[in-house]
Length: 287
Length: 326
Image 1 (cartoon, each protein chain N blue to C red):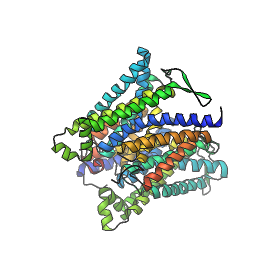
Image 2: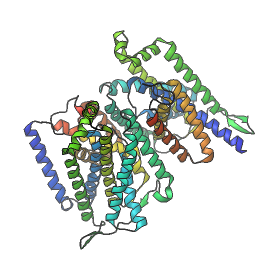
Image 3: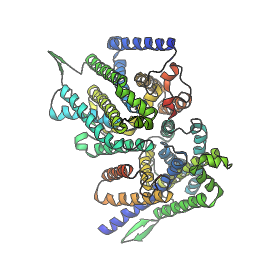
């Protein structure tokens, strides 16, 4: 393989991964922007999506069932979490961080207890390779990118073209005013949390065939999602998307030259600089 | 935090504390090998939780980055012993210096942001150092860790061996007690009061004329220093250090212990560590995935008693307490 081809392939892998991260980060950003809580368990919702998909494929043998059902199940779980855990503590920021830390332990250990500690794989549901720059690229990864883009477009439509989306944006802007106008903010919170969880799980199902599944796979994804949300600017969905793709491609390309660990250290330092110099993010507006 | 509690309860808690202290003084002679190591470890993690509480319970900043200083303390001891071939005292001095300097550098940047951003930036810094530790495997041993020998500790004419568990225990106990007393004095001093005023109302503290950032940095450095001491004690006790000690989930344990015990106090973190470590150890015997229950306990605690066990004992377990309210 020529160096140019390698460069392109790594860049493409980065792009696909960046789009998956965008799904997860948008879920995080929705919740963070609306309820202003840090959900430590968000990475584990991603993991649950992937692991549930694995189970569903074991039972039904069908990836497509899993692709639809796993995010739905995790979305419902997210709504339960909001209702049962976060609402009783009134979304108090620090207490919420602790509660979601507890949830994270519960999810990881439950999966460890049932799924086991050994990494598992899911086969790519779409085989085949596309010829590209003198080598081949898996069709499934192209499908992942397309699927993520469709989901993102759906999210945009939901937020900006439906009544529910308008409620969400209203509660986010000014909760009291929204409540005064008759918006059921409790339901909006619950649905938003569920939507955020479902997005993370969708990322998990899509990522499952290109990575290995284990109970701690969310631990690594969580900081990445936070990096993207912060760099993109809190509450800026476009910013989150751009930052995710940018980070994915840059880390992908960096893998050509340095170890993944070094690449990650650089993105972490970059995020620290953004936090200090421009806490509203690169694309965010001043709060 | 000195909060007026019903006198009888306070007295009962003080008496219970005295009994525990007496027990700890005689522990090596009362306990078998297993529980001696167990109590030693509890003291070390208790110190770590207390160090965290300086920054969180007293100053009101939630940090998930204190594991960096714990790891730094442990590695400072290990690397000094391996490479400098020097004594325990120098290794301890190195641990103090390294954790203090590291806390000063990280804190200098971290205290510039507050709220959620502070939480995130502490996680970011701890991940950077975690990754660096993994990266430079030749020095740190990475995931496999670093094992080392502990030379005898020279105290005057005595040469005490850390391989003697009684010596090990009393050394740890003495250092933890000393750290506790130092923290106690600091928290009684104007510094401690200013920390609390920042926690209660940062804006007002600033308007009164305190340089809030400077005191936040001070609290961060104190916290980092004692986390480093805990790390050093860990290294001396287990003669081992590895990259996993620096992971932010280790900080998460400290956060948990401090809050379960009662944040905003110095005793609470020890109480929380003692109870939680005993709890996990006990149920760990018959339930492999005991961490599920730990998670459930955390959630139950924050819903039912956000002020921790000490808060409940003092009769302030209800919701809406200051530390729990943030």
